[in-house]
Image (tube, rainbow, N blue to C red; front, side, top):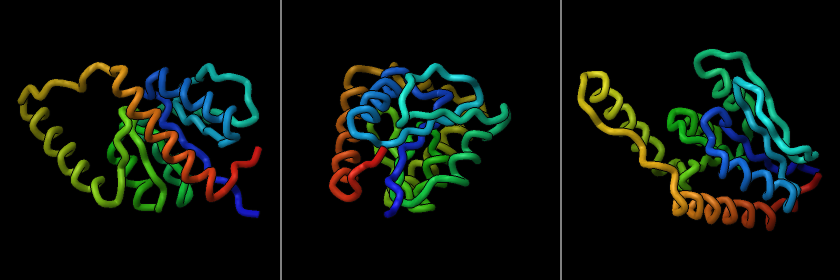
Length: 159
């Protein structure tokens, strides 16, 4: 029997409300959640939730995730280069604001991110992201449920 897909979480910068939704989804559906961070996290006790602590350093969590993610699995991240890497491997990616990264959009988003980074490094004030809002939480919950429903139909999560 094939192993059910997992949800990977780039956990260092993941908003608490997103983690809480994922914890509830894991217990409700039996999907496995893997939180990868370079610091210890407080997570609920569940056979479906585990954390992996990687060494501090540039992109340690990213490298860990990219090396292990499988096609069809889901990554939660706001890191566009990381999303591009997992999408290239056939996995799916979703940011905490509910935006899916796909093969059709991730390269354009990566180019925009790189352009904005170039502007910032040349001294242009570009502003930062808006505050994480209730509508962001709702958009994330909607996309997470869509992904869970799709995979529940295909795989029937196992514990």
